[in-house]
Image 1 (cartoon, rainbow, N blue to C red):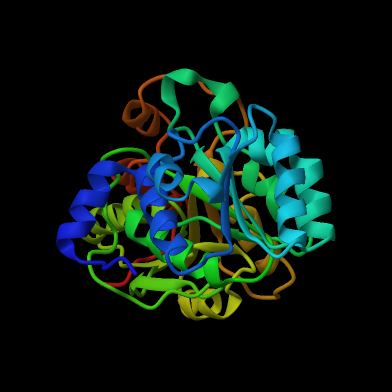
Image 2 (tube, rainbow, N blue to C red; image 1 turned 135 degrees about the vertical axis):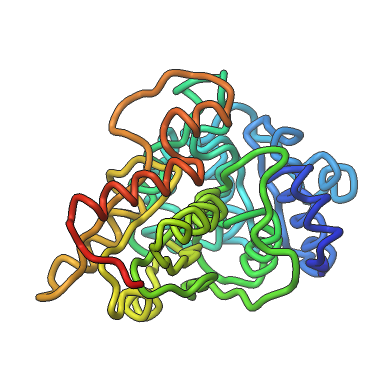
Length: 330
């Protein structure tokens, strides 16, 4: 088991999401002889170079054929293997969505579909490689657990837990090298159990993936404006932890969801769907990627332009609160 501490967190942060995923899966293979890793000709890009070298009989490169890869993964799962199948987010979630629907959702086979480079981290490769709508597709498939780890340490936790988990899952990896750390020490992690990182009395910020760190940064900025924010890491988007959500919303004036995904169909939609039938619910601001194909660029520049860095998020929340004309606690 990989130890979560400040030193490792710094190293993992520099390595980035994909590299840490590969390290975690290689570590998990030592305890799971039935574990198989599949790649659509992206072994090194998925951080699986070391895994392939150490466990050559447990690695398959299916080529640039994601639909076939999911079919092969399903067949291996039926034979009792614990399968992790990887590719870039739009290819595994969109191109192979029918195969994911039938083999993972309908047949409930023990396959973890791992989307590398989700969100807009693929930068200059452009919209063909962005994962902007993958959660909306995967979340709509019955029986599929959907997870979006907050940082590299949580990727380690997710892989370890997923290797023990029996059933289909979609794991969404966001962020790249120099991925900011949320966790620098060990903590309890369980699928379907959100984690409250900061408690406040005015608003609740519910975030996932890279936006957990950015939301914590936004909370610091908001505190200087007199807005006290709760921040929740909703790492599991399906099933949604409604108990933690309810607790976070007690007495709050607004709920804000933040995600590196389209505002249609992702975390914001999941929260809205849950809150809609309630007679009393707080106003909801959904912050995420716009409903359009965005201009390609360097990752950090794009996050800034699209309002997904901490100061941008704080500004959007501040404007929203002012528009509601709601008094803030002293």
